[in-house]
Structures are given as structure tokens and as C-alpha cells.
Length: 102
Image (cartoon, rainbow, N blue to C red; front, side, top):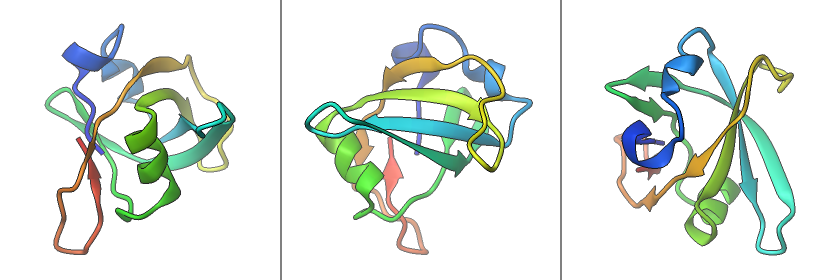
């Protein structure tokens, strides 16, 4: 998953640098929130994570690109302030077959 901070976020992603996990909240068509914990990495002002291209989170982001990112621990317990933004889904493939949000 890739997030461009200059286009998508009201404040820099550097706030997430001291964390290993983020709670990615996506939205179903009916507006129901769906939080999930992701391991991530930051590089060049972007947030990266991998997920299968047919996963529920990829389908929800393609349908509604609005997301909320909250630093958390591996058990989805919040560890900082949430950041709201938008993601764009890409069909890019990695060698392991994972999809990418770009």
C-alpha cells in the first residue's frame, strides 16, 4: 500500500515513524467502519504494506478511498492520533502475488 503524504494527508506521515503497526480503517458501502491492523514501512514520504489483491480491504478501498490511519500495537490498541485521508487502489503485482494500494 502506498500513501503520498503531500496529496493525501493533512499532516506528514513522519508521525508514524516510531511505530511498526497501523490500524487501517476502511468503510463498507453502507458506511460501516472496518478497522484492521497492518505492519507497515515508511520510505520517501509513502506508507507501504502488502495485501492480497482480492482481500476485503482492497475491495473496500477501490469502492471508497477514504481511510483512517491510527498508530497501534500488534493487537490494534491505539498508540497515537488518527490521520484521515484517501488511498487509491492499484492493480500492481509483486513477485509474491500481493496487490498494492498506490
